[in-house]
Amino acid sequence: MELTLSVIKADVGGYVGHSSSHPDVIQKAKEKLEHAQGKGLLIDHHVTVCGDDLQLIMTHQHGEDSEQIHKLAWDTFVECTNVAKSLKLHGAGQDLLADAFAGNVKGMGPGTAEMQFSERQAETIVIFMADKTASGAWNLPLYKIFADPFNTIGLVIASNMHSGFTFEVHDVKEHKKISFNAPEEIYDMLVFLGAPGRYAVKAVYHKESGEIAAVSSTQRLSLMAGRYIGKDDPVCIIRSQGKFPAVGEILEPFASPHIVEGWMRGSHHGPLMPVAVRESNPCRFDGPPRVVAAGFQLANGKLVGPRDLFDDPAFDEARHQANIMADFLRRMGPFEPHRLPLEEMEYTTMPEVAKKLAPRFQDI
Image 1 (cartoon, rainbow, N blue to C red):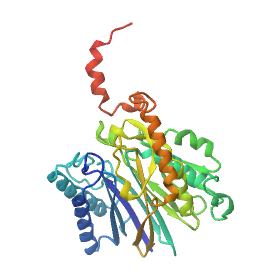
Image 2: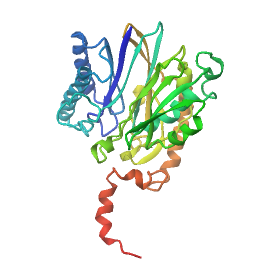
Image 3: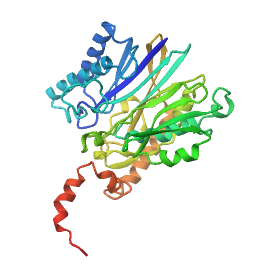
Image 4: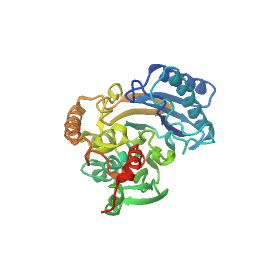
């Protein structure tokens, strides 16, 4: 069965502050998608959250970048924003950068990850959703999942994965893309993946078959808006099992928290903490950044699930490590490297302070 899986997210208003999502907002989104499914626009859907981000997970047969599906998502976010405004939630509608829908939500604020594929006999999907971080947050996990044999033993011992994967990498500032084959071009690829503020993995493909294996959202809200209005809070879809990494291999990178940009005011580095959905409510210094993982089986386009994959005591130590890392970084206060370097602060509120003080600078 040929189908499209779309994950479209937006911050339509935080409860309280930037920490969580209000039940009335979530309910409104469910009503909108249930109505669309009843009319036959969707095969199935699931509404969930990560922190203050509303996540719309939809299956359908309209292909990627479908105007119908994107308009459904946009209209849903607009109605949810109206609910948020009625409750005076914080930052209501902050990810909606346009006044009206223009055929596609790309470039309009919401984050999108979509893939079109033929459903396998057993189609296993893992969807990652993050809060208080940027699109480059997936670079290190995706590298480990699809290119690191110390993480993914299938690259060594599974014949259907042994040939490797192809990575599509986007330059989010210059709007260019390049592809690398792993393992042959790992060293070249890491030159770019190691700079997640500018380069982000958009998609991964099985090298032999060319089948899509993973796709992520790579939009940078600050670059779209020309100012800081909130962090990107990216999403990522990964197909699992068979010729793709196993679920355990996909989750394993998050057992060792890595440092990402985001956190308070989008201006700090912090550990990406893997948590259950119920714990994805970043409150400490508006953080630390969170990631949740929803697992599904697909059955004729129906979403069987989700399984809350980080709701597992095996990740308790990762959460403990993330808290220790958060303690260490917080001691740095306004100093780099906890605070982002100046060139990354260009789209925060810091330029306003610098402009006010500019007349006081004197030539040496």
